[in-house]
Length: 229
Image (cartoon, rainbow, N blue to C red; front, top):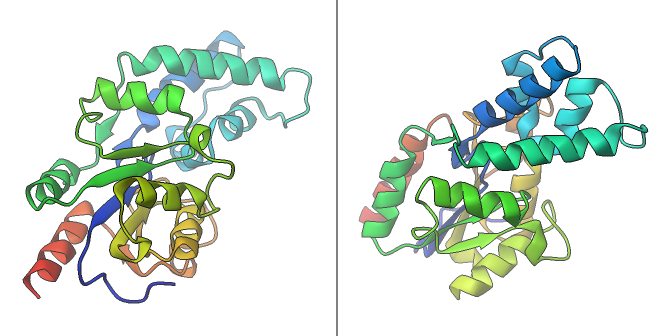
């Protein structure tokens, strides 16, 4: 586990949903469309916001109160994924406040940034293209590219291999315990963000992240301070 900010930051890697991008509005639109068609009550945005990081299967469970194995589960899941794929073309997703400035800060310093996500590539890449981020992103690691997804460190180690850096010289930023677990297992300095789609439990203070921040600007400030020392 890293306990000190890297003396020479050679890459910053981000989780996607809830860390780099606020994608909840897209998922809320899809879930609302599906529940309305099914004649079911609308799901509060706050509940969708809290569930996004757990993926599409968790959203199906939330919207329809059914578990994997239910006769309708896979049909609902496939419908949700199809609708989301269409939604990406006119995405409402946005970079979190201060994130574009942070990315520019890294780019100007010659520090590559990348994404390590559990979101499949067929959704991640079009989303980045829609937001004109794909050419700025130095590496994109999705479940399609590895045998084991987060919280296993394999995706993060692959990203470092592609960037030709030691994991100890990298930072991983995430909004879920599995992000921090993966980063710690990879030997990276880990940052947990309070602004993301934090699960109800455990509290972020128990994730054992090296740093917890309330805003993107605090990451920018830490990097700026680090570069002056």
